[in-house]
Image (cartoon, rainbow, N blue to C red; front, side, top):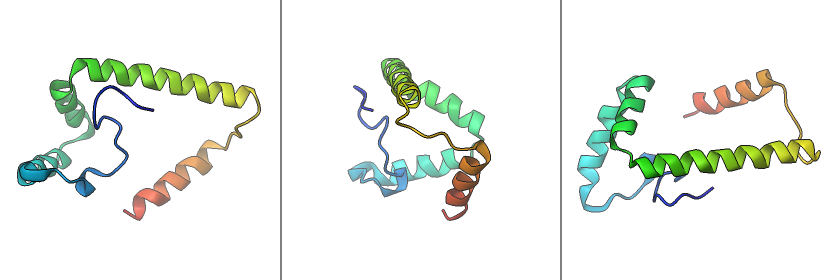
Length: 96
């Protein structure tokens, strides 16, 4: 899933990225943002993300959802119970 906005969907964790000369400022901003609630972080992202990137991201997700629906309808994807999925995600998050 690629957008026309560099880094929008970069799958690497922010802490693992090379930010070059501005790394201290970026790390400081990440540290400050980490202390915010999820809702507060959304406000920050909405305030600084270029609107065309957000629109592109929404379009990309719509396309991804359509692809996933098609895979399920064609029998190429197997559904899993929600509790199993959430337990796997919780387990991954606990190991971070």
